Image 1 (spheres, rainbow, N blue to C red):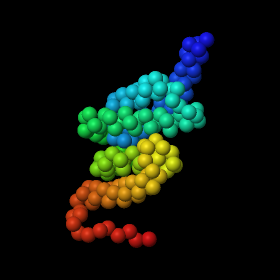
Image 2 (cartoon, rainbow, N blue to C red):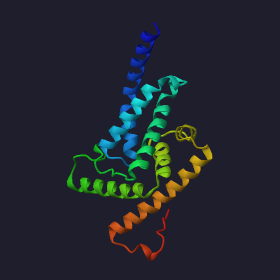
Image 3 (cartoon, rainbow, N blue to C red):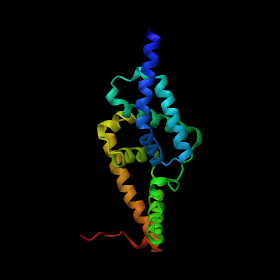
Image 4 (tube, rainbow, N blue to C red):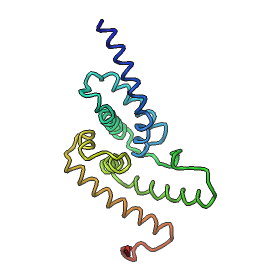
Length: 187
């Protein structure tokens, strides 16, 4: 009887995983992974989660638990390979539109790619989970196994660096001399 319950339980968990699949893939992509790598990391995440589903305490925390596993898989991959990927291939960022809009989108993607790739892994993960995925500091703290204060600190630093990198990328794209001093924003 226990074996039957275990099989039924695994099937229910697999169905719950299916609902999280696209979001997990987008998160991996936002961390700088190519589409193939993102799929591999998500697949590895689900295999680990299926194997260790008994460790999940609350079914309502499934997505946080999965993202935590994804973060650990990504960290392991980085340790092994030490390379990052670009966002250029992300299908959702590109659309068929008028040539000038398409060029503008490509320039925006290039600037964002430039800025995100310059962030270190710790800052990139916090930034994407909070700003792109809309997670709370507490959730990110639990997922990445760091203190809430550390989440806030890393997020603040990541945002400052992103602004700086995006400004630098814009100045470089316009051919301006970035040594001319800081760009001031007039309200």
